[in-house]
Length: 143
Image (cartoon, rainbow, N blue to C red; front, side, top):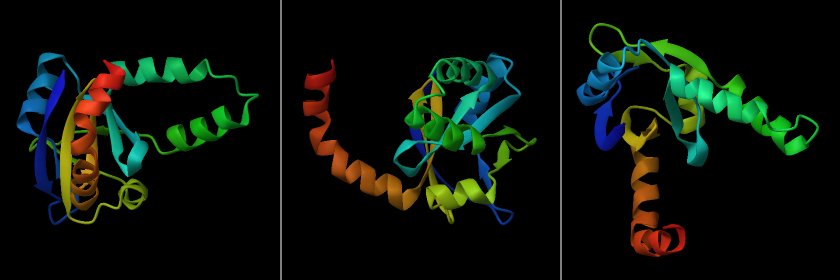
């Protein structure tokens, strides 16, 4: 559903603009509210409400008697907040999530099929630089 890579900067009020292509997908699928939370590799994950419910269902199945499951769920769900785009397609990312992801000014918004990821530009550039050379090797192992 979400594909592509978009570079943006936060505006003067620290709002992030969601790419027009993604906003069109929200509109076509009647998505008004979506969820932002701590992602892996120090990025933020953004899910539509429907996909968030799927994720929530999966993680609820993890046994709370296992310490790893409790720790993961605490970090994942305590970081979550629901957001709505304003009329210009901007969202306000809470400071604690910006701190987690190291976001200061420039961001990269990445479509990863069923989710959107928001990265500090420097962290995305570092991730891409260290990962792109192993792309074929990863494909060979996973596909």
